[in-house]
Picture 1 (cartoon, one colour):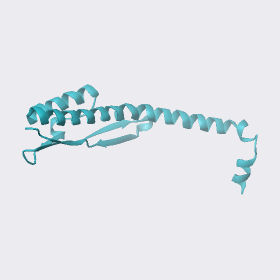
Picture 2: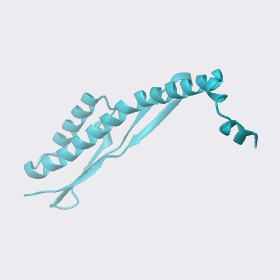
Picture 3: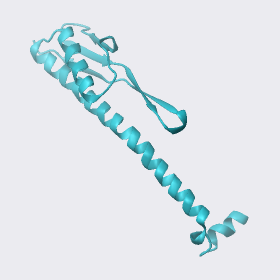
Picture 4: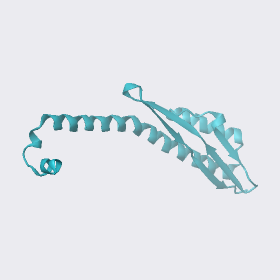
Length: 130
């Protein structure tokens, strides 16, 4: 009942410095976390596109597994992602398909020693044309 009165009582909360400090702290925190997460997510999306492109190109030009891995590791380095050759799995279940799977994780460090691990698993499958 007391909280309901506070929410309905106009004019008092707008003048409270504690509420303003709380809102400011919350806003700064959200912006900080977004600024840390957004570049990693953007790089992950670009790398996912690179995996898809490699599958599409491999389907037409019969690229070797080593060439695909080399191209993907080079692209990951450009994007600042920690992808190693051992993180990339290429299978050709039969003579008509190629499957490229990558598994990697990115660790973000925040103020206060808090860390966040984000795992990415891009996987694309393509039909070999010849």
